[in-house]
Length: 213
Image (tube, rainbow, N blue to C red; front, side, top):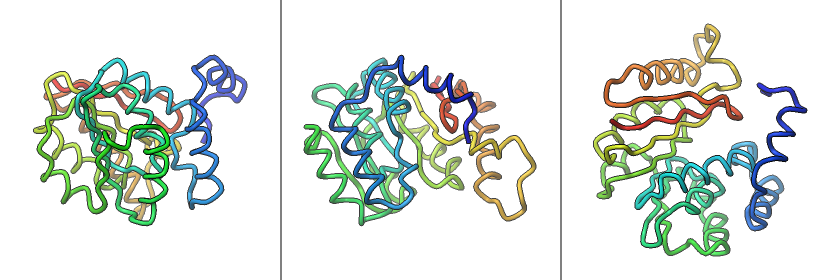
């Protein structure tokens, strides 16, 4: 769903930093070879993630939902030289695709890729995180948030993707639409939780920036 007129969206993209060539190649190959390529963050949102990561300058990043690795690499651009990014993906078939581009972009030694259920993996991680990006199954957003809060540094940032869900969150969902229901609960949750402060940005499909107090 397009929330902005096309000419405004095109202008915003044209006047934002261009994506690095290796990420352009990653995006192209994703669209040619992988199912549901729209799940790839892409140029504009990728530059937003890169900028936010550079502003935070994190020592430790966690990404929940790797897909083909585009967003992970964008966030690595702001990672400290001795920092680490943990990324979790449930689909094992994407591992070789990810590794190819992690190596091509030069971040393979700073990325620890995990395959499996994030609800099981997150409790095993020992780092305290400066930056988290949640972009996985929507029904578990609240669960991911609750698991992450104790592992966040004070002032740390949690980014939540797809929080507008093509505008569905503004309407009464179908009884079987569990994702929309879960996102409505999550959006209310992080907007009222006293441990954090949040702002929902209408970027692409909605991106909430949450700061841990």
